[in-house]
Amino acid sequence: MSGTVGSKATHDCQAAVVGAGPAGLASALSLAHVGADVALIGPPPPQANATSAETRTAALLVGSVELLKTLKIFDHLAQEAAPLEAIRIVDASRSLIRAPDIEFRASELGLPSFGYNIANTALVEALYARAREVIGTIIPSTVERVAIENESVGLDCADGCRVTTRLVVAADGRRSLCRAASGIDVSEWRYEQGAIASSFHHGRPHAGVAIELHSEGASLTTVPLPDRCASALIMVASTSDIASLMEGDDEHFADAIAGRLDGLLGQIESVGPRSSFPVAGLTAKTLAARRVALVGEAGHILPPIGAQGLNLGLRDAAALADCVADALRRGEDPGGEEVLQRYMNARRLDVLSRAVGVDLLNRSLLTSFVPLQAARGIVVHGLNMLPALRRLVMRVGLEPPSSLPRLMRGAEA
Ligand SMILES: Cc1cc2nc3c(=O)[nH]c(=O)nc-3n(C[C@H](O)[C@H](O)[C@H](O)COP(=O)(O)OP(=O)(O)OC[C@H]3O[C@@H](n4cnc5c(N)ncnc54)[C@H](O)[C@@H]3O)c2cc1C
Image 1 (cartoon, protein in one colour):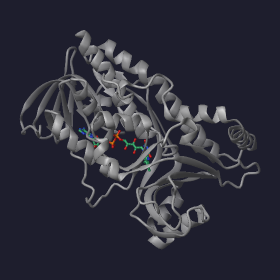
Image 2 (cartoon, helix red, strand yellow):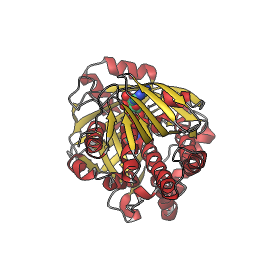
Image 3 (spheres, helix red, strand yellow):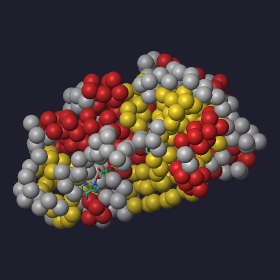
Image 4 (cartoon, helix red, strand yellow):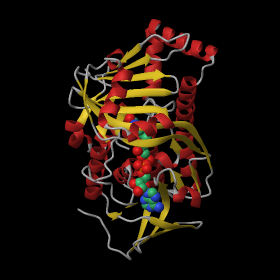
């Protein structure tokens, strides 16, 4: 069933998701899964063969993968998903006190993998295809005006459609119009860094191991792709280094990767297309207000270290679906204050702890302050020596501090 409505249509629904990026699509599908009458509004995601190809992949952790299974998407992606069996962290800095290498293995937690790495294009295509099957109203347009009333919200779209809803799910990204309309303020900060997302083929198989190499003000992360001799790449460095790597040719880029990896994955055989991103941080002062709940980058942006961004966005989507499911069961207004408050309670600590943790890690790499370098070294030594501490750190990396949303536990909501 294709649910696209014609232009100039009006539609009433319990929840309207604004933004068809990965967080918005997952949110719309999660809400539909728990029985909400939901509309999805947003330009369709670009196709994999579009000229401005998305070069990012998402390392999705076990909870996120469980959500994709619940929403009946993972089976369609299994061919394109590479399991993450281990994460190796290498201190490649020239600091006086270098931390030893550390490798976390999923098997230490009794898991076959920490999750799967999936190309963003494949992920959003699969989510969108599923949305077209199960969501009654899809409006492939942008919201231009948000009018918040006591009992409902009116959304006017560029194509002339109008949607009236009890709950707006703002998944409209970092410059969220819905967030602004609800009056939610943000804290925003920039690092003097940029990031490149790309991929490369290498001589030695990755063996399911992601590698994070940290050096002064920079990091390079390789994440396995389904081809055992290919990995996705995220390089974070100063804005000037990133600009020159974007301007240079493939050979220059391959040399830069080889120089940093120092043979860890064998010879660099070819590099894929690359795109660059600013490295920035943003947290919304609150995750919901006035019938609007923030999901994904509308609510939080983290530097691309430690694969937390979209995992957080998917946990938002699943937690909000839990809250709406409970509200519908009790006959409550799904956009009412109690529901928004429960959503904020469910998400606050997870978002805050990831934002602070990733920011601290990034800043510890930007500093030449010896005591901080020493502290980092001591922590890593401790992790290497104490298996129980390693397991604790792995669990903290995988799961939110509060309980996992129901849609991520495989249980019916
Ligand atoms: C280099 C890099 C690597 C990353 N790697 C990982 C990783 O390994 N794991 C991980 O978990 N995260 C990762 N992330 C983070 C992840 O990519 C983002 O969290 C995620 O893509 C954000 O998705 P989103 O749906 O919130 O936002 P977006 O993808 O920005 O989607 C927002 C959508 O809203 C739409 N929109 C905007 N305004 C309107 C409007 N007015 N009306 C209707 N629609 C509107 C836009 O068209 C867009 O489709 C990485 C990020 C970077 C930069």
